[in-house]
Length: 384
Image (tube, rainbow, N blue to C red):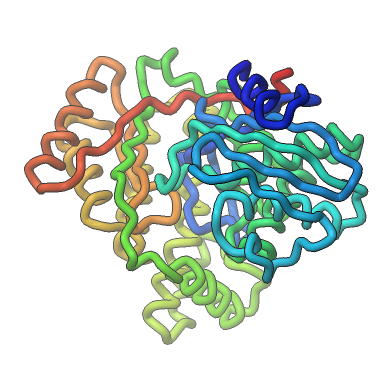
């Protein structure tokens, strides 16, 4: 925090009005369910995007990142449009998009000087972009006294990514970054943003959740998210429901029988089943039966691999190697085609499982993965 504030002062010649942080997230269970009005269970990571902000009232937005080489970016708030050079891609789009979304909603945000630094791994499926969006939304909310609820900040951040950056994501990532609390997973109903903090003290049970960043992102994933979203929407229309969330798990066999298209049928089977898996995991955590969560994770991976077809060789290898070395369960997390997996392990066996995964990657000729523990951490907050 101190380094970000000091760098801001050197860059802009004045002290920031404050420093804020927003975390990345990892999703324990519930994948491709959020844009189907379904259920998810993410937790915030200790890794954060940290931003120093100072308010400006002249309509100028100046942005700088400590993580991306390049000069300071200067924009005018009145000129921000989704079709502008900063409307599609690049780290600055996520920050500028939040300004654009707030102004579009009628909030009087005039400008700011911003300096950012992030420890959220990029390209790992851990929502580094949502962290940038949420830290911007929270800082502007406080600087301009907007009085927005955390759920509204998350929706604003989602709109920035959907309409400004052009990524058709659901609302899970931004809500997790904005609303998670330390020591808990967030049980989120993405239809109405109803949420409940579910205790997740794995250490008390002698367990650890590992994140395995495969360090790969396959080009096969380009456009795949949008195609699967369209397929899910087609399934909902064919079944006469607002969203796949409205198909109860007990109704699944009958619903599948009504769908002639095999691909749509597979997408529907995954989404309805994964909604059910989220509820099962929440029930297990509430009952203190944490070890039983492991097989549900592995079951979820099989569904993502076989029905949704969003896994890849590296992610499948993580699951096989980890479970073969004694992990309680594992699955890919995030959009897939690379990125990360989560692995539930006994604390005493964590090193052995990590070593087994590393050795499997080396034998297969893959880039060495990055492995670190996921500790349920706090959501977005002001640091100073």
